[in-house]
Image 1 (cartoon, rainbow, N blue to C red):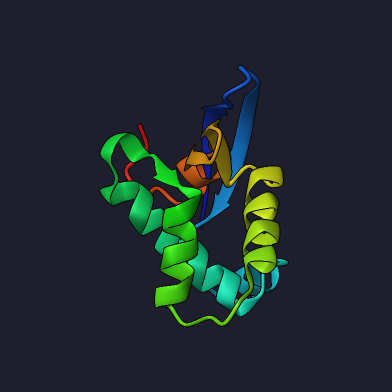
Image 2 (cartoon, rainbow, N blue to C red):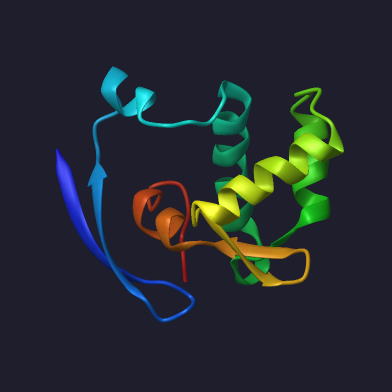
Length: 115
């Protein structure tokens, strides 16, 4: 099943987002993220949902990755966050502080409560 959303980005641009709501092989192949990154992103969504104002820090992301025992370096973590920013899963609210981006707000509503 496909859902259609209209979403506004932090820069004021409007987007129409088509979301595949079926978690099948095709949906899993559509991502360029590695397995550990997918698991980490789901945990980031949980952190955003639990956080005051839906804002988390880079320190919280690093700590969460260490708790997950992913074994990734700080450099890999920074690269991962950069990917999430570039692909609009996250946006940098203030230096080192992140909120859900336009994609997470629409595609991951089932994981986070975006404001």
